[in-house]
Length: 116
Image (tube, rainbow, N blue to C red; front, side):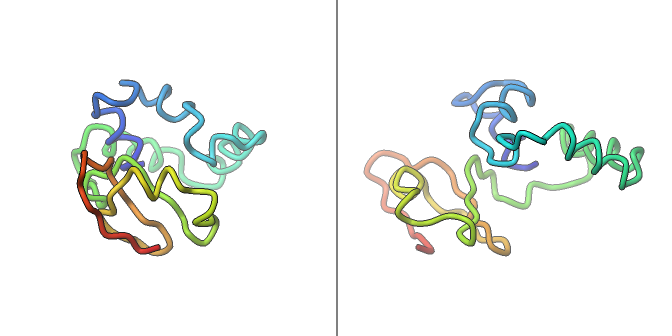
């Protein structure tokens, strides 16, 4: 959710949550059963808690950005280096959280540290 919010706030991406989420950049939105999965997920959790969490994330009132402002991320357990040359060549790592590497866009001529 942090990466989505950071993209909405960035001038380089669409300025709405819907446009960012459905831009095709997130594998979890490319799932043909996304609507069914979301419906099942919402039914499994307390709906009120989910709405409160979402509003806090959007308005930044309770949950802090744990990604350091990342606008990109990748799960290296589900991705290969060979299939992600754009990510490796155009982003700079901010931090790792569990199996995910969070990153921002690389500035011109900037050298960046990588975990891969």
